[in-house]
Image (cartoon, rainbow, N blue to C red; front, side):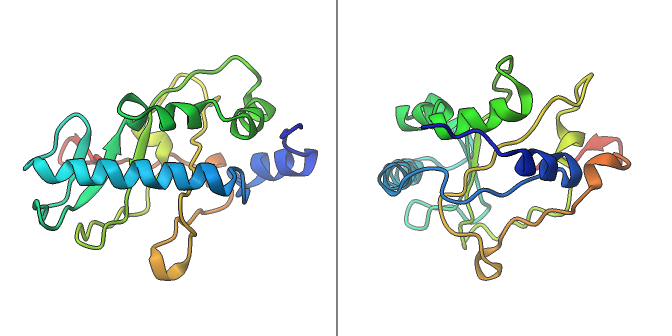
Amino acid sequence: MKYNLSKDQISEYHKNGYIIIENVIDKEFLNELNNATDKMVKEATIIEKSNEQFDLGEKHSSTRPSVRRIKQPQNFDDIFKKLLFFPSILEKVTSLLGKNFRLHNGKMNLKSPSAGDLVDWHQDWAFYPHSNDDVLAVGIMLDDMTFDNGTVLFVPKTHKGEVYNHHHDGFLLVL
């Protein structure tokens, strides 16, 4: 089965700077990913401060874990390594970039109610500038994106405009 993007999807990506594709992974695999995520969050209950795996919220505790981000999840559970090579995802990426690409970074942003951290409007490009613009971020949502649960929002066509300064007082703002 082929999972390549259609010409219309590729055109939409180039026009708007993003595309949203639903149901890229099957429900069984999605359940495995959610179970592995739950297991990692449970593992975070034994730590008190952020480390190479977890970025914790200010109110994190062993009884109320507040995990903002799991860094490089593919290094801590093979199910996330499997996600990196999932055919329906890889073929969509190669439809845009070709077969010569590499992973720059892996992370899982969680929306823990206890973390209370808002990720403000930003341009991803400002946080990982490269010498060319043949880069893209692939986001895999493990639950539905709705306005009630803090959906990701995109601003069409901003990839063609100015890259704004993401520094404050001489320091790069870190997401």
